[in-house]
Image (tube, rainbow, N blue to C red; front, top):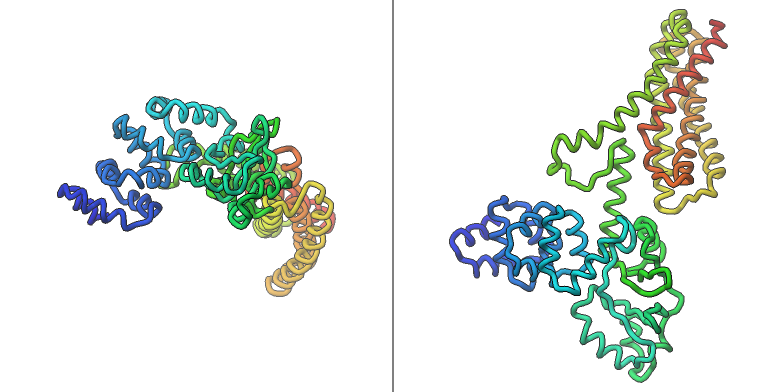
Length: 443
């Protein structure tokens, strides 16, 4: 990039363009990350027209916004017309309203209509991520006619690997692969080689469910229809990879008790980061007051046997960690559709057996440590170890159940992750601990 910037500064634009042409469009977009704001537009204008739109589609949000705000109306029009529609919609969703108006003003009437239609679909729905640039065929065509038609219009389509066969009124009747067309005789009719058993989704289907279909059926593209099974668009694998990345990021943030955000960490302001974190931290802090109230309630027990206090952190930490292990596995299983709502009792039974084994092993090791090495009173050692066993049992079963319950009530299972599970288990561990101490030590 230093070499290219030097060419630009010396007004050697042809040399700069040749240097950029040597690279893949994705790598060129990455190079723009190294360019300061003052030079982004200068370098972008050096790009040849045939690759400028492709590079633009792979750029980061901030750079795309900076370029759009700096280009002339004619330059914006060229980019919009060269971009695939779904890429255009993606970056328009990130822009402020005044910039969106300017972009739409410079798009052709047909492009503008399609963009406005796609922008009206709910966020995270199939309609919001689909493209309308696909190959549609008529079932009355011969294979020879179909191939000629694909050669004529295919250059402007996002993919030609799968073609969509439409009947009257644009009803989707089947699909046919380009491989099937090439390997079939020229005079065969399309209706005789189409596949009528195919997967499709509605425009309002959630994008996370669609990602699951791509994984399950090894799809490269999926047709999107309206309520009358009329084809309105397709979703391609490149968009689904973005969806998977977005959903995984969102789940990680929720599991860490933060509000989801699409913005890059280093480009997000301190105030925004604080705002995303503070609400959940307040909720968890207030819920932790229950733990304090439990300790106050059993204050007499602690005053009678002060040594009990020393084991509280260990019990709470172990219980929280045990619950987090289970919830993480179940959340992953739900996300990959390896576990369903109907499996709740199987999960309970499995986690009960796992926690029994883990609880016994940890309780025995802990007993040896505190009784034989730390010379703690026998009854106190027994109290701690029995509490540890039941805490692990409860934590793992709760960690397995709560994500499934969340899914049942249409909530994101990721909410029931480490912070929330830990808070619940902490309170439960203290109740078990002090109740066991009161009973065994007769306090």
